[in-house]
Image 1 (tube, rainbow, N blue to C red):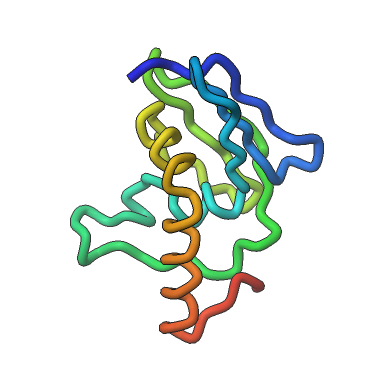
Image 2: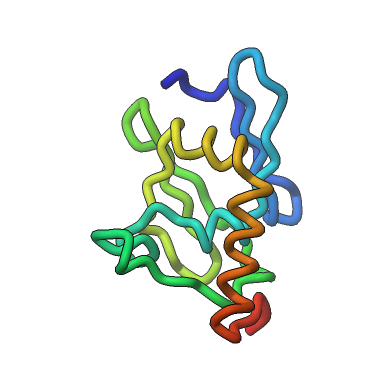
Length: 117
């Protein structure tokens, strides 16, 4: 997977723009990145262990650190920092943003959870 040509965090720290060669930027909200984090804490060690994370509407990105030449670690203001976001995963989130977000919203509703704290 080709590395992005640019990663840019918005001034309010609520949006990450990821630009890949030959493709305009994918705008990924911090909330989406947090609730769909690839970490074991969120994804578990198998699909049946995946956790629905509520209450992250106002989460922000505190920092982004490179991990080798293949990924970044994103630290959020709720101190979650264990997800390694590979270039492939960021691209997938960008390409499937609408469907993944809707699935998350549907899960919240089914479980009686909210995006708010």
